[in-house]
Length: 252
Image (tube, rainbow, N blue to C red; front, side, top):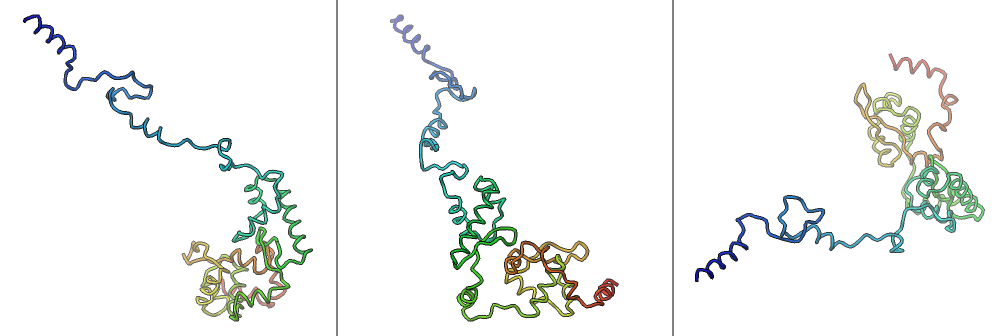
């Protein structure tokens, strides 16, 4: 009987472990932290196993890799598609970087498209204005387009708005106070109109008076058909002879 008891005790002692001791388990994985219990489930390994592998262009033809426009694709058609949805003129540099084609090719294709539209007498035209290229309605059909857009409403600016716009164009960046001083009348209402039309915009504050500064927009350049304000005509031929004296009096 004592032999049976001793054998039983030996079996119990061989399987008994001190509370908190590690359990025997499979060998450690390379990514197993040293303080991780050996018998615990690896939730990270299971989570990673459930995530589908990322498809590559070689595995899935629907995955598109970034690459230049292939030679067998009509570059002119690509440019047409992009310019059709552009909300502002796009520069040759920008189009060249997007399509990863030389700028000379972009310029050549844009010129060819513009000449093609003009030669075919299309109702739209591709022109370079405001530092980039954009589709415009042809001038020959402007009155019909204006009739459709305005639906009988006047789209013309008032004389006061034109005068204020001219001051902003030639003196920008300029404050409302300076505009009012030049015109001799308050210009707050007119500035609000020009802002609403998208012809002028705020461009910071004057460092001395902290008043808001205004300048013309890209839309302004589009409307008058210029690339930049540097192409505005000289004012000298239209100014009175005593304009210098007037400006000196204002500065005093």
